[in-house]
Amino acid sequence: MKRIMTSVPHLTLVPAPAGGSLGDRADDDLMRLARSGERGAFEALVRRHQGKVLGLALKVLGDEALARDAAQDSFVDLMRALATYRPEGRFPQFLYRVALNRCRMVARSLRIERRAQERAWREDCEGEALAPDDVLARERQRELSAAMQALVPAQRELLALRFFADLPHDEIAEVLEIPVGTVKSRLHAAVAALRATFGEALP
Image (cartoon, rainbow, N blue to C red; front, side, top):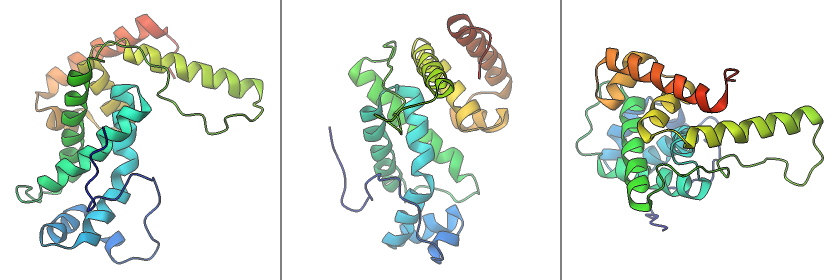
């Protein structure tokens, strides 16, 4: 399922080089430079946003391998959108929309919309001894991941945008292209559905 273009850096989750002039440029400036053929500008965008895109895909898809492929392809889609992107200072919302569309394509093609996954959370200290509190926290996180995957895709997207990407209601409305009032009502229903599955004590 790998479709990695050589001009898109692989998602290794490495930080941007310190002190680089491109790393200090605004997202829209980097998009302009990338459109003009500056490869380093696009690589700077990938390094800056790959963690958020991967995290969003992981919340929506619930599978690490699928999420990494979706995140990689999201940046391929972003590259294809260079010619049509309008710099308006709303790049994160644009990128989230691109990433969600890619996640939806993955979910449709693989029929995983309602499949509960517990592989969404990679253990940083696999094989190491954990304190009882750490074990409990990790188990709670797995339970939350499974509860998220039991929701319908639209609810997972809303919860991921609100609580993972930390977007306010108006920006979620922009990403999903729906009214703010609809975002609020659907988000309320999504939280209620998650509590019904996961319990009242949400983290």
